[in-house]
Image (tube, rainbow, N blue to C red; front, side):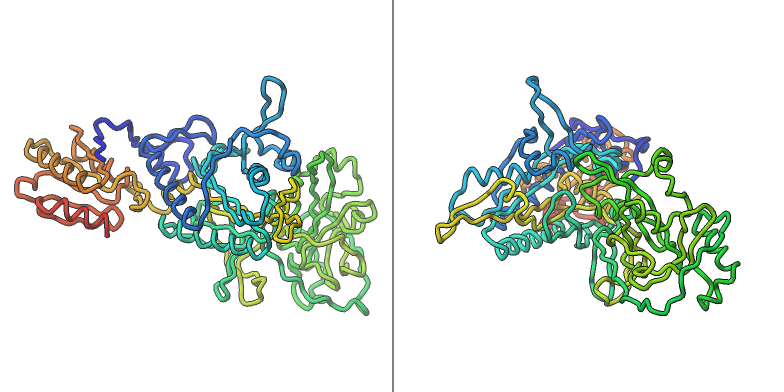
Length: 585
């Protein structure tokens, strides 16, 4: 295929778009691959669509290779199936909801577990039909509150979602492992640097869950890993090792102290050291000796609200993502002044466990707040704190919660080293769903013994359109994009570097030869200056750039490798063979 730049629907931009924050957004817009239509909604122009389709092709080939079968379900979905699984409510404001002219409720599909389960239920009735894996590559819709970073986090996006249906847990594990390996092959072919981490299931439900995260400093996901053991997990999935219980007998009684003007952890620590508590502890008091009690309000799917208290060591902040994952499907809200007014026992800056539990407020603590641990915390009166409050003696939490931030140097949950943190972009997520959806819709087949067998499901997603941005994030330089051969819009970009008629005729001949060899060629036949053409070639990012210019008269051309930056001079007569060899190596 030959595409002439003089006819290509393309306009490159010299300046970054005003709303662009990350390199992929800037470059994909500047290079004319995508254009913004609305917040989180983008059009794919010819070059961008070619990359998107090539990513789809890689995904499709690897899915087909594990025996998955492609179907296509509608994006416009009725309310009833999602009502059955309660996700019509659980998804909250993330759903695009609409009504038809008769007043019936619909949604734009964010994911399709319900429809796949109903499809298998309607078509299969015997154990002989199983196992089966179905998938689709389809546009999804989620009403992101703050869409950002171009196509990295949009409201409309292309996703591959597949679903396995098996007769038992062993079958589910086999399907899960097959997808895991297929995903590794996909990302390896796309030349993406990634890590596999333990994850939470969230609104999807199910048990085992892993995320594939692309290494990126602009990633929204924080993950941790232990270099000694290989443990890796999204921060939402990190389980804090709890300390061994400490003896309670013989511990000094808790004492309430006047602590004026100490509403913050920092001021409390300053007071503690100035009051001589360092002698009691045998060392200076630190924020880790204090117990911070954070109040939040949960809005449950049924519309009910609940105020809860969360106790964490004072040297740590509450991580909003970890908190959100721990309380799903409820949504977290901050308390308002009205909430504090309605609950006068909540004394800002001086909240302690006693008033919470006395007034029926659920109190959950970080796992480090174990039995026998002693704390400095609020005494529920303005200007007062209690010293030596012992967990399990002076207060008993209602449970634990994983809400505190995870930091570099924290012990790994596997006990084999320390954690280090990094950032990544979620590019894939695999779940062992189990029976959540097959129970909801009673997806049974007749087993070998003639009795009904409830099927077990797996769910596996890849952000296909997001992959385009991820590759652009990882494969670019200060000059522009650098597409891997597997997804580059064209195999080679041929540039005529002067207006010499002989060189132009030679370029036509070389391009025809490349086309005859089955290569996709982007041919810059414009009358623009060589400088403009070279800048566009660097910005557009084809892996190979063949320059035909002044050297043509001497029987020479120039081949540039966009990845390595290397340039080599070739005999013009050997140009086609040299390019073909590099493309097919």
